[in-house]
Length: 356
Image 1 (tube, helix red, strand yellow):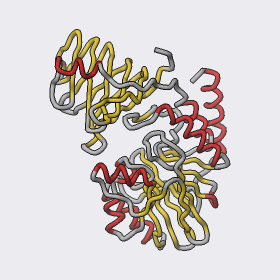
Image 2 (cartoon, rainbow, N blue to C red):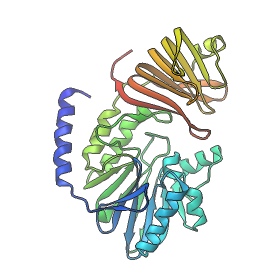
Image 3 (tube, one colour):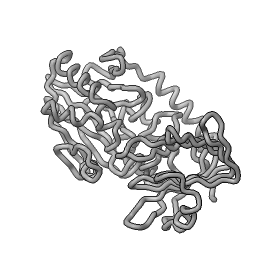
Image 4 (cartoon, rainbow, N blue to C red):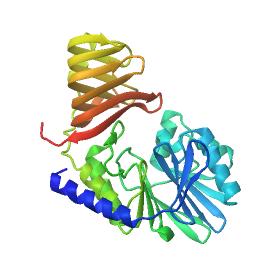
């Protein structure tokens, strides 16, 4: 992002944030809170994860589950008991656990649930709970005498993420398609960086009239969050190629079933391996990650890699090939094992925009 644009966005964000006024913050449990956007619309918050509750004429729809079964049940109980509302639908906006970890609980409560067909397909392939009702690109759900719209507008943080539009509130839940202002680039382990900016432009074209935009993580804002996302992921396209380097160097430094390490020097400090001028290759069932950096910290017990500056490539495993999906330089990176379903997350603070 160039300096002038960054300054302009900062000023715009501050002006917009000043004009936005929300209601009280409600405590559901020690770990779950609700930010009141209006009398009918709330952001449910666990940690830094957001979702939406919309209530109208005694009916309710919830978007995104909290990242635990307990808090998902707490949220359902709050809507039913505190607001005396019937939950007519639960929307799963992407396949990652911070959006559908509590789906089993939703099903146990007999609540009809919806997701994009891509989400249902990924869930089926990974052995995860499968949402009941699927849609290809757009789904309207009635809530009392109003409606909300679920819309798939392209690949971004994941290949299946959707946004949810509440016309009566002029409120858009951007999910992980839209980033919170001034945050990290985020987890790009399953992202399509080439399409992300284009997808955000599609979101702006359809829902640029929103008064409130709620990102999947961080504070709500206005449409400046959409503009910020468009610029943030406007990066050079990757030349899609099949990896041959990875195959040739793997046998030289295999450490276990997931990590491959090679460096000019390798020392141990407080249980951490410090690698200088190193390469680390990490893989799970769906992808292979290749990191090159002058300085790498590897924590074997946590299955975690940290690096301040370097380059990272992410390959999709397709049959017996690894096909390059992402190739970027970065500042501040964390690679960590999430679970057996998600595999490894690749979390970046900043992408260095250059032509390598």
